[in-house]
Length: 203
Image 1 (tube, rainbow, N blue to C red):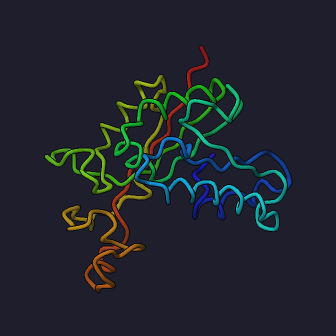
Image 2: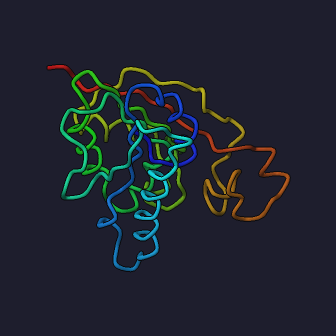
């Protein structure tokens, strides 16, 4: 259950012959009235995804989460895979509702996997400062608050070259390069990221 972006093209083909893949995005109703283009893109995304059976096969579908009308059944998924999306929930004050929705839909013993741009723990930057970076402790505490247990963490997506002091936050770095296609940003590479695995208790 990822967000339906780049990772979808990596993961979904593995489920063509079995299993079920649900690409999920924030419910369009959660976007503010001054974000009509974002709402429209969410609906357009769902249509484009379901039409592309050549890539995803017939075992893939789309859904929305975090809204008032759940589109994914209780305890119906084995894993939720959230890639670099946590900061968006923070900016919209939706962390607790989203994680509660994930907890509801994951089977007992199921997994919540999170990859997120990582802030320095000693940083004084606000979590909702629209820089994309979040403290690992903040993410862990939020998941635990929803009822998940932390079972593993990995440095597979770590990048010690990332100084995290860029003018446009994580979007200064590849692949976005908001402030220009400059050599120094390419030498840093993509952002430093936490990789966390949580489990829903069985009892």
